Image (cartoon, rainbow, N blue to C red; front, side, top):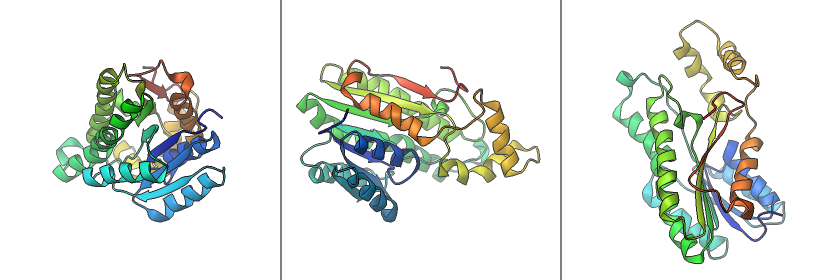
Length: 261
């Protein structure tokens, strides 16, 4: 088991990519705390974690609130037995609008959850990691952090920011035994994408139905498919393991070939 004895915290751990990562960590022997706003979802994931014979903890937390995140990191460390070895800052959300129609509220919420949430969780967890001489920070960016995209300027700005943040913090702690990396998925078959079907169809402006629009996106991908959350989880397990100790400050694209940077 590659993560046996490690204690991990996954924000946005109630569903989709976060759930897949939490369960993959537990299968590899880690104790895992999951954070999200929806209590029923994280309670269910915590029970699934414990089915692997490891400790699971479910903590209600709004990733868009600094005080919530700091308190949740401290509580997770206590619940798992004294520290966090692996932080996965995964919580995210997406809103669609032309830049001229993007309100201050839309802009600020998108950056709070997708970028500031990564900062707040990392700030709370990384000091104790460095003091212990070992740690892993894995931030969820996106291919949207490497390329532009119309009608999602706030989301793309936030995800670009995550990569810049990761690269900077990795250099700060490079001599401490702590690594800091980002994962940049393309289209993943999750509820976030499902919930955005109507927005994608609307902004395409070509009269396609929601399903026709999603099929168009699939056909534009070299592998002609969306990713499964388990494929992102596999990369997270590797980055969290001892085998990845020499990898830091990197942003790994997983996109079925749609983005090659």
